[in-house]
Length: 236
Image 1 (tube, rainbow, N blue to C red):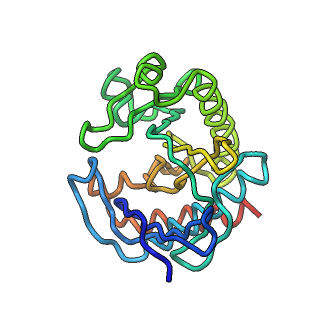
Image 2: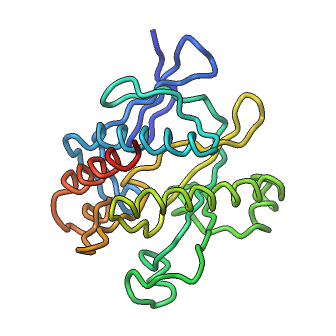
């Protein structure tokens, strides 16, 4: 019998017969503002599972080490068990969200280069920004590991920008998380989906991500279905 070992805002993690493999169940639970707003939205879990499975498969084919092993069902996948690094790595290509507010830029203003930011993964502390010295001072990771994550995030950005551009979608920004596998290697973990990316239709500038939920812009599922449909065409 598989045992529940962890439960986050939108996913449940279960043991499997292999101690180095976990079963991940995507729920319909939807949160925003670090959990201050919550709702269950039908189909969202299956859409995120399908989108993330597709993206991780695409990244692996292009040389990115990931936790993903296989999609089991509409809502579940098998992943390598990782020791997660308690950092969120954000890569920004266009101004939006906290970056737009902080620097008072126009919405979707193109950035001269990708901007990478690290945040401590802590709802209690509201995910504070961290620079490299702070990360090392708290012994979260060392210089070499910071560089590995930095370089991997930029490679992921290049690959995703190309994929989404072909699907007529702007990759505004995205968040990734990394972990350490049983061989001691840093690999991409968690998920990449409209829950963790800002995605905007190139033509209409309509949001196709969780901003629809955050800002009450309409039907969240419609945007996620659009993303899945376009990616299924382009990722083949």
